[in-house]
Length: 177
Image 1 (tube, rainbow, N blue to C red):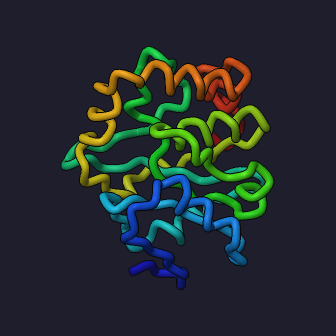
Image 2: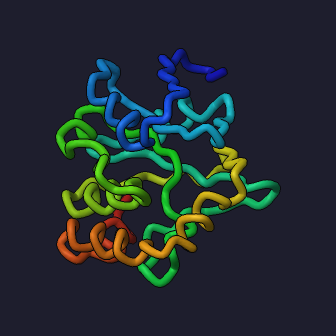
């Protein structure tokens, strides 16, 4: 339902989100966008993200969770539980491929790992300050993850894999943010 033509890949299999998202490495399109079943894009999402696109950057937007608008904060710390981390971005396919995609061995927060890795490689985002995504889960999956007994071990592994980086600070305050 986008104002710009898009190719949609969907799966209803029990595969992990990381494994399915990594199938985008086979994409021949210049950009990929990762959605979960509880994400809904506004019809102008791709159009407005393409308008904001800058070379070697991805584009992210604000979103709505219920009726509340959320502005992502890339400067969160581990203590913030990543409750406002990036949800859905328009990501250049060639950079996604070069970074090796999502870590399929993680049982949670593989998206946090991916964006930390992006930042550590100097790939930052351009923010479109408009809620062009509706996140219908209301945080239930994040809350479930934050209550897991192995959450700290998973997050420590994510941080260690990214050189101890505990924030996406490499991208904070850069031009285009």
